[in-house]
Image (tube, rainbow, N blue to C red; front, side, top):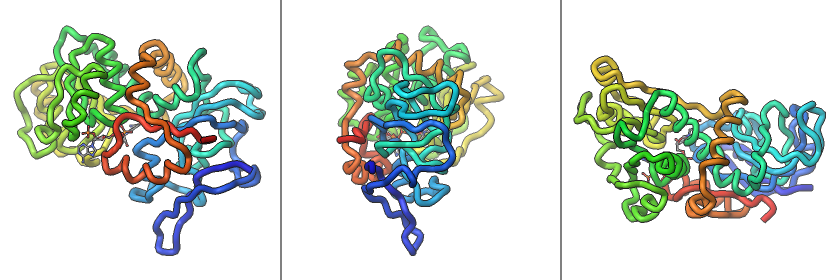
Length: 329
Ligand code: NDP
């Protein structure tokens, strides 16, 4: 038997989330690697799954947890053997395939990547999908030729998981990072990650003009909606925006003006189905660039039982940085 968060549907269609004891027979048939999960995380999407606020769960019952790190217990996949250290992010795990808010999981070997040498399960999950997505955004800006000499970078949703890691990565790369947040009382925290300036997200979240004063060389946006539209409208000629999230909304009430008059580039970033080579590239950069003391500032450790209480808080924007879940705790 092992511990896991289990999601079921109540008769009224709402989601019931509880801490349960499962056995191996309840693990999915699909999967060629059985793993012991040491640490998992709570991302925004895990919050959606556990509360049922958005229909991210596609099969019932479900174990949530889109992220996991630990060791392989048994494998019939040629790339994996017992004892190997792995990281799992996305691929529909925790949505349509039982996930990693569990002491044990059965996964596809093709989904796993090797944990970088020297990186603990806890460190990997301090980063998690949010941090790996922040790196995909930083990679996207670099691929668009955005350099520190070109000017400031805006990071929206700054105190969240994606935002916090994005600030740390970009500041360490020499960018002047401006953090947009709804939590101005977290100004010191955001500056400790490397932000040079902190602005109130209210300045970006309302309806704005299609073209505004040019300011940003690049943007990492995890918020969407008017915030993304305003950010795009403020990008300097030829600059780029990496868009990965929808914390404010899924809409994008913008005009084509910044694209056709300023050659602004809008790059979509998806972590869930990203190809393996790109994942490995991102994790290699994360291992090399993220300082342990910065990660310690970003991370809060909780237990599997605590995860149930934290799910609604992440959706309410009340979480600072990253929640790492000690599944054995
Ligand atoms: P968090 O909840 O940790 O961070 C989101 C942050 O957005 C909050 O902390 C808050 O920051 C800000 N925010 C929350 N609500 C609003 C609002 N109504 N208006 C404006 N800002 C708001 O989530 P994550 O960092 O894990 O994820 C951020 C987003 O990115 C989510 O939408 C998530 O689904 C998406 N995502 C997408 C991925 C992909 O593959 N494309 C992968 C990972 C995440 P503050 O208080 O500082 O303003």
